[in-house]
Length: 105
Length: 307
Image 1 (cartoon, each protein chain N blue to C red):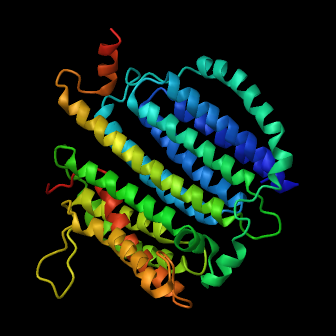
Image 2 (spheres, rainbow over the protein chains, first blue to last red):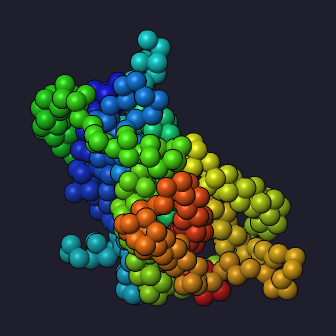
Image 3 (cartoon, rainbow over the protein chains, first blue to last red):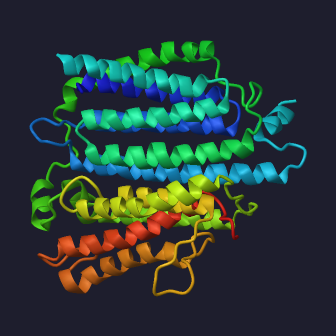
């Protein structure tokens, strides 16, 4: 894939994710946007690493993105566990969406 | 020419699926769109000549993350109707995209010509070659940048230990016995085989500990969701797959740290390998890491049925 095309896709994903995270309501949608934003960053990183001549792209860039993917899944998992715990703690707000509604009056 | 057209279609579909994941009215649809997004992204990684990242994206990014989000959506957004978690409105997204797109395009216009000169691993080809590991990404992960990998494993361990401390009710087992008894029981040995292959292949070609751990975690999760008991012939009791235990989480990082510290007397520096021994020691570290990381990913899904 040509680097400019990948870079434009990376930028689009980053903006979508960032914007989605800002305006989304509910923890699930925010986490979805956060992951899309992270994928945009990874795409930007690997699209910037040249693959000229070699069969695979820069191995250090691959290692960085690999680490990033694994850490992102760990933070997503922890965020979801905390959200589920919060949801069980508030009896009259069984879902986080209704908790959001209550907080926003 | 055809490849360029296919790449364009791939990139456009990727961005549109991401939009769908953000703006789907139903939360479960959004999560499924996200899983498809992850798989498409895996194909994009292949097109960018990054096969290890493609494997990790498919297994961890799409598979594990998608499963996490789906399971949480069962509790956090149980009524699959329009009024749970209002989707991001498309008009709002469009308003954000216009100025954001201009900024990004301006930033990128100067980047593309200089990207060809940018290379992260400037002086390391010689160091990578002296390690003797055939697969460069593994050589980077556990040789040149082994400290980063050690920290990453520590981050995962911290996350799962925090997860153990979060008090959630025990898991409810799936009721679909034909699926459990028939399909899952037959898939588990194959899943273990694929995971072992990915682990072994990581030293000479695409593969590695993280991908193997994610596949193994998928198998362990299937066992934990369906209550299947796995027993090995010499043992009288089945293996305990349904309760969170701490020892098997620590084995991988502990092995990594032990080998790292052993590098000081044996090879002159921490995290260094004696000449010629690198492939074997790396395989040992990766084996221990695969086992521990698989249990780590499983425990990040919350308590098991027996907790």
